[in-house]
Length: 126
Image 1 (cartoon, one colour):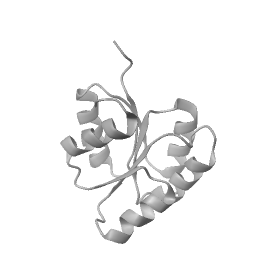
Image 2 (tube, rainbow, N blue to C red):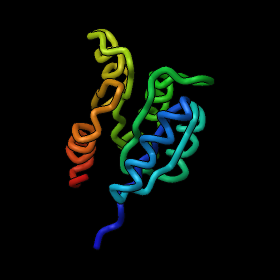
Image 3 (cartoon, rainbow, N blue to C red):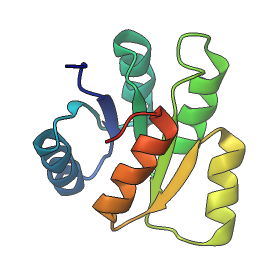
């Protein structure tokens, strides 16, 4: 049996973080949590998650800048980053992809679709 996929969930809103992390845990993922972009960079370098779910509107360091910094580090450059944002405007998606995100999903999260995207970017069924 293979190791569970390790997901770093970066979300500053406690209820969103709790709800999404519980659903991921129920599906068998190993879940790491960060509340801001700075924590995300540190955890990603230390824990080497298989995928990062990155809220874009974060305190301390926003998701766009955190993703840019992840892409600049050899240790984290290859980790897929899925942008999660409540702002579904076209320029938000372009901005996220420009920052280095691998995929883009809107909030509220469509969990089934998110699982499909995680599977696609990691090459492992979620």
